[in-house]
Length: 228
Image 1 (cartoon, one colour):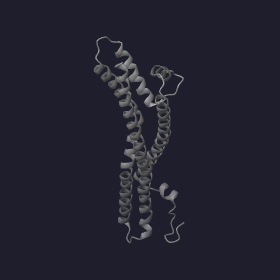
Image 2 (cartoon, one colour):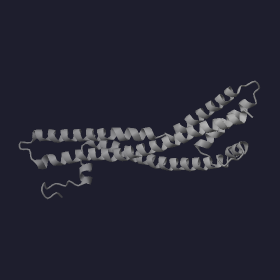
Image 3 (spheres, rainbow, N blue to C red):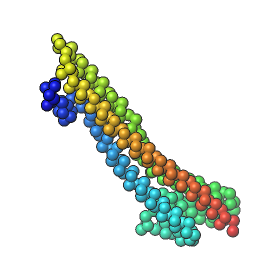
Image 4 (cartoon, rainbow, N blue to C red):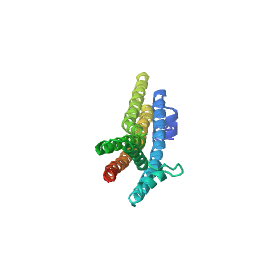
């Protein structure tokens, strides 16, 4: 109980007694916050797995073993493979198919292999970037949704003073306080989403650069192998 205003301005009381539009805004922000935290944890584990599998594949690939043996191992369903390994599979599979064709130039052989790897790269990149757009949307929209709830709550609070002969701070304070909670919830939803989006976008970009570098280096290896 507030000793000055003689009213209960606790957080729970303000939320419980908020007007219906403000409650709807709070509910929307709560749902967006919970979903963004869910996606934040999903991406955290997914990107850690992707980085671990990429490191494992690069270590095995650059160990200098036979490519056919590596391909057979990567296509074994019992082996957990990552994004870079699937790009390797797509490229080496296409390389094997094209090389069996007669009359195909080396340029066409390598170009077809690169197209297969590029298509696989785009699929893997789409998977890595999944849910990031939701985090970006929550991070950019939530403060404005919270502000909408605040403006609406303050407007209702002042409208309630129209029927009062003498307005006091005690009469308008609860309405303003509940309205400001909507802004706080908007920021609470937006800040983790923005931090998560920026962090994971950086991680995805690093993985994408590693995959692009691998495609170029692998194309050069296949080109030298085809020239023998």
